Amino acid sequence: MKKSLFIALCLCYIFILTACSASPPSAPAEPIKKSEFLLGTICEITIYDKIDEKVFDEAFSRITDIEKKMTINNADTSEIIKLNEASGKESVKLSPDTFFVLEKGIYYSTLANGSFDITVGPLVKQWNIGTDYAAVPNADELKQAMGLIDYKKLDLDKNNFSAKLQQEGMKVDLGAIAKGYAADEAAAVLTKNGVKHAIVNLGGNILVIGGKTNGTLWKIGVQNPYDARGEYVGIMNMKDEAIVSSGTYERYFEENGKIYHHILDPKTGYPSDNDLVSVSIVTSKSIDGDGLSTSTFLLGLEKGMELIEHLDDVEAVFITKNKEVYVSSGLKDNFLITNSEYKEVE
Image (cartoon, rainbow, N blue to C red; front, side, top):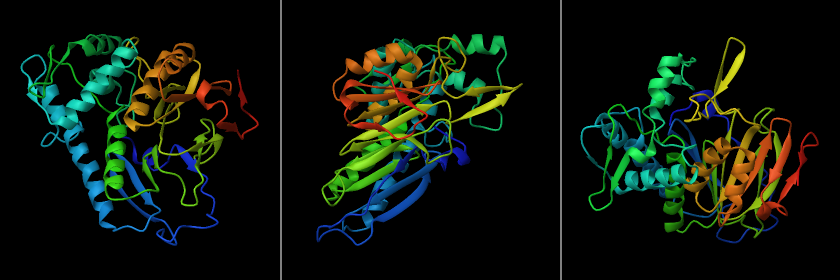
């Protein structure tokens, strides 16, 4: 769940928020924006309604609660650490939050046929990408780690809200999905408190509530994987949706002249090596965008796009190493390439 501070401060999308020609009487003259460092990144909430600012405290408190339960960095509060420490021994009682995210994790692990696997923890620990200790593991270390990865060996008991890892040494890592859940829950807090126009940005996991106050849609740009943060490939219109990207540019390190990114393939033990550099998923729930962005990246362009086209209310933008852009059918009329270096492929 942790990312380096430098990367965390760099957001995956640029917002093109044009000035409203006329705001409704209930809207403040300027949006209200607050941020906190949570989930290993900068979490920013921007509200465009006139609202009691206590709603920010409630939303950030909800994110904090989720982080405490699902982090792999605080043994005093983390249910995931307790689950990992009990691997091969016993079941662990979980909160409804953690149980739900584990259920989602198993769902996407199954959907991707193990290309995405929430028990990838042992492999993540070997690589340590995003930390000062990042290094290429030796063959024996990789073999041992890969032998501990199998989402089918994570047992969930919904009647008792408990879970068990069957094999000692197995480790769940929710880094690829928990942030999406936190975004959804923060948005739920806002809407419960009457917010109708807002942006939740958890280090690049973007969720928009409603549209802009003048009735138009938000315009969101997808990051150019080969350029500085804030430079984008194209833009799309959004309302009441989330967009999440996974890309090789997010976290990586270099060793002996070769770059190793953070999207690890459980089936090879190494960072995914295909033609993709970025996948952006648009869906109604950020947790689904989180799970699918990693899953489809690992599946590759052909299988990833095939999966997206078989899912309801999910769209995607795939960007390849040679700057080709593939857009799912539901986004064909809503994604405009604005960078001439990129070309859309039908």
